[in-house]
Amino acid sequence: MAVMRIGHISVRVMDMEAALKHYTNVLGMRVTHTDADGNQYLKCWDEWDKYSVVLTPSDRAGMNHVAYKVEKDAELDVLKQKIKDYGFAVAELPAGTLPACGRMLQFTLPSGHEMRLFAEKECVGTDVGSIDPDPWPDSIKGAGAHWLDHCLLMCRFDPEKGVNTVVDNTKFLKEVLNFFQTEQVMVGPNGSIQLASFLSLSSKPHDLALVGAPTSGLHHLSFFLDSWHDILKAGDIMAKNRVRIDVAPTRHGLTRGETIYFFDPSGNRNETFAGLGYQAQRDRPVTTWTEENLGRSIFYHTRELTESFINVYT
Amino acid sequence: MHAHDTVQNPAPASLPMAGQAIAMPATSSVTLACTGEQYPCRHDESLLHGMLRLGRKGIPAGCTNGGCGVCKVHVTCGQVHRIGVISRAHVSVEEEAAGYTLACRTAPDTDVTLDVVGRVRRNVMRSVVGGGNATTSESAR
Ligand code: FES
Ligand SMILES: [Fe+2]
Image (cartoon, each protein chain N blue to C red):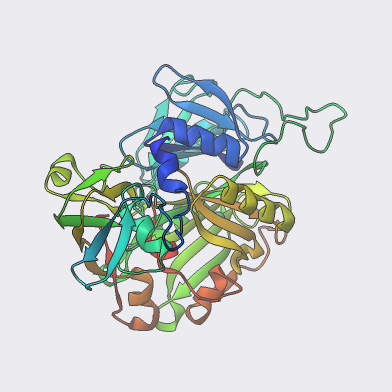
């Protein structure tokens, strides 16, 4: 049974015109579908499924849901039973609930985030095709993001009251959906409190990240780039487009990834992320970051957390 | 000019030479009641942008795009106008009518006085990490 990767993320935006300019001109995505309600569906050039980002018009920012893709449709029945047996409510949304997408399982994580699982989505192919392809297409715009790589969810966390939905989510995702832990940040007395949890489904250092916060929300959605040089160029593109940059190009200790954090025109944080860091495997020892090195785990060079990284999310 | 461009990309302020008549962009003075911080802000830039551009402090800065809510302020004196969409998760219609707004999406028309609306709350990382009780300003979350 295999949940494979992040399939799409549905995000609220307050100004669709500005959002489309951002996701197409800055990140380099392409609109592949617009529905009757004005929702926009976009893909990156190196993705083969029809969309990985859904933008929905709203009076606020934030995430509607995140969906992960399962290898085979029949596995959804098995997963549905497993989720039920774990004690969680799970709904089945029929095929076509989202355009070009098969049936979806819908459930709520302990942190309150809506997660979905699906197995089928229309395959439109990458922009270089699958027969004798070139390494990249001439149509690349902006940063030319390859794919939606992962997201980071802020999870309700109040250890004094015994609330830690980072731990609750992690347990469910590992036991039921077969994610595996690659890294974690442990804080508090004897490093006994899990503040951050990085989970993978693949050979990437993470497909989903969870961090504790006073309230749940979306910290960022992240797009993959090849190299450090691509990150620098992405920074130039953001500057040209007057994009608000939260954290200028640097490296994470966690995942070893190279990064820029920035905001879309509705204030949802984006990341461009490069470097696969290491090969994640199920038997690779979990990397643990201690409280003393919390700053270094996130911003490897400056080794200090920034106020906005902690407090600003949607 | 599109309102969004105005916020993100104001033209550079001109520096007139002595005796030269160059039209300066209209500015007003912004005062933060809590700290007494005062800075000039153009009528076509956000209250937050004016502060950041001059390297001043006092209003928390986040997304600068009206979505995260950390820059929430209460305009207690003076006139302002909105220059972009603000998240209703952070400022309701009623609150806006009562003078609350997001500093990254609001520009001054006159001299203004602002209260930074951060409830003081314990920061998760700092309260757990090191067992301290450091606080940080936060707006509606
Ligand atoms: S800085 Fe995010 S809403 Fe103003
Ligand atoms: Fe990330």
